[in-house]
Length: 305
Image 1: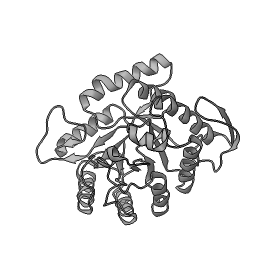
Image 2: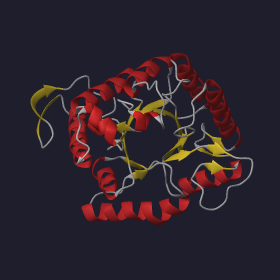
Image 3: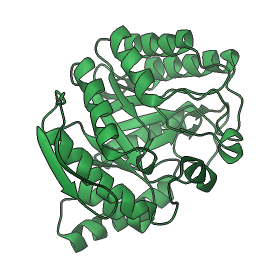
Image 4: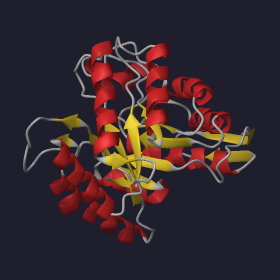
């Protein structure tokens, strides 16, 4: 099982220097993936949770591609309806090319109505739009010239280069917990990428629902690649806690569960919406990730210690 980290690309503590520090330290510790989040127009509903400044994920990853050598780079998650799918496909392919084939596209349909309105994108039917956009993105990656005529976008004979290094395209991790999101993950995803869930929900509802959806669509079940919280507490939190929250022993149990469920990767998320992202908080989070790498997980061997 590989280990990734959701790096905060927003808030007063986010600067080119701190983003480079995160990347360098995580790569040195042996983590396999570094992922960043996406908001284009932080309206008040977004700003309350993810304070400005908010660095564009593709720009950040292009920069980090030049200051890293081995760590995977990705989004957790790109909000699909915010950008024309040809633009998303070309930016993603460019990052994959610039990084030597290290990009992962985490993608979802979005949740913030005011942000959709600010961008002039309808909030209604965002799931259907996301499905079509993913189909276009994957076609652009796989082909040199693409035509498409759909409900939301139409074009003819577009040249799509540069092609991504990874063929037919980078891995796609589809986020979301709704029935529509599960169908999207089965239809278009290499992995399902749920976030902030309990073990009870994941094993009792989420994974069984994913398997039923795959059976209904007569398609393979995508891999499980969850994003879990990382909050180390002095005392155990017990039953009902989110995966990744609790004592080091509880977090070790969570990772062992995900490994037993066959998850090829897990993303650790030290970010908490609404909590100020200060330089001091960044330092504490990096220290916690170092402690975890040294005491609970062995990124080099991709296993628990």
